[in-house]
Length: 148
Image (tube, rainbow, N blue to C red; front, side, top):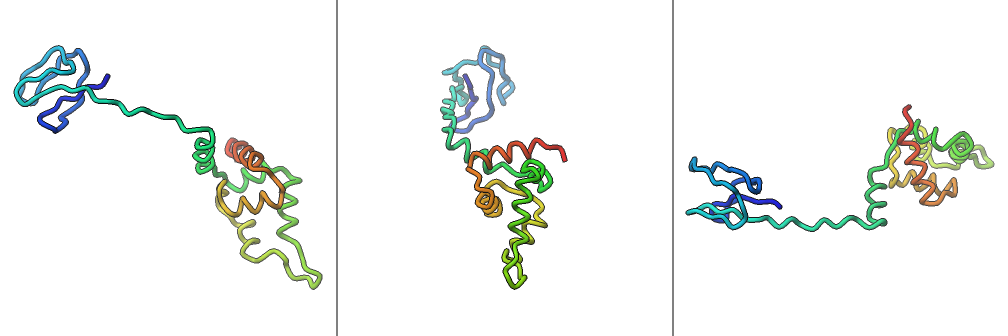
């Protein structure tokens, strides 16, 4: 139970139930309890808001928003075969020898400072590797544990 000392509609401070409390005018009340009043002062019980835990889907959205790792962590979590697939995509050449992967995409693969789970870059990796959403989630969970 949470109690507040009030003066009119103003909350002065929180008080501990069944304790001794000093009022701003220097006098004391004991024990503090809901419903106590004297002059302009009163103690009221505060209704705690009901905390509703997120659903599994909401919790996953929250978790994904916080998922990020360094490229080194991500590459190590991907493993050599999957990283080679990404590099193969990056290095594709047209018959005339020109790169098929757009320059900006190659720069992102090579120079990213952070990988974020919800980024379009990771969505691109997911498509290239044909990973499910759950596989990408697990990749980030693993990557974030790597000390590199």
